[in-house]
Length: 340
Image (cartoon, rainbow, N blue to C red):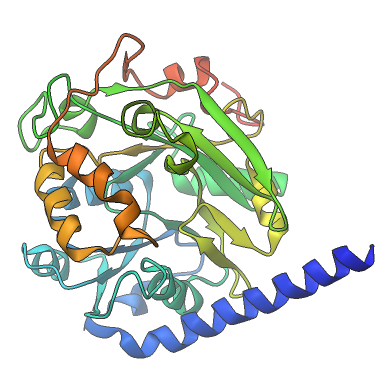
């Protein structure tokens, strides 16, 4: 290894230690509401989330991941006032913590999620997802997560990468194609199949994937500021692991090599993103005041105002979601060693 390479490796080791210590300290900010972690068994797949005011998403979120085989949900509520906390506290498979601290200063909730992953996730396969993200992968409708993770263990693949697909309605934002209680893909049936731009970023070697509807509609004049849409949501967790930037990148850096975006031959998935349910207009107005979701909130004020205006996102290249086989045919998710 060159002198420069050794120096970068040293810096990344210290960065990882810093983030581990942040997760350890973050435990003190979490107030237990309901703790059902004593029911966690060896081999259970766990789901970790931090959220605020997600009552519109929670029934579908829990139902989806229960059907996939998640055994326990570990959730931090960041001051919800829409009943999300009460709803979650009543769920038999949810352990809930409350935290009133700044979401942005906690690295957008990563410190809190890291505290739960460190305390409860070591040795488990863990999903770290937002309440508006539903993971799909080849055969997810017939082969639940325990089968998927058993395969990943057999082939030595320590995680599952995913492209984030923003779903949207036929009409303007603030509307939906089906009533509340219908499936996410009935309410928001459309998505952009591409195009995608991707590159590796040193020194962490993390993938930077951009594209999709938010890129097309909101950032066409400044594409470098478009959202990153690759994630590593499912990992066989170790206390030595840390997420660095949402679940977009990780340390140690070799974990970022697990996924290479659309066209990936290895087994991969997609996160169906329900951000554009009808409550998005109110949430965008709120974010203009709270300023909790970007490092530089002023730079994204125009984005939130554009979303709050309720534009129509459907365009000539939009596709109606038809299931995981469609995503395989489009090259958006890979089947890897998991054949028919």
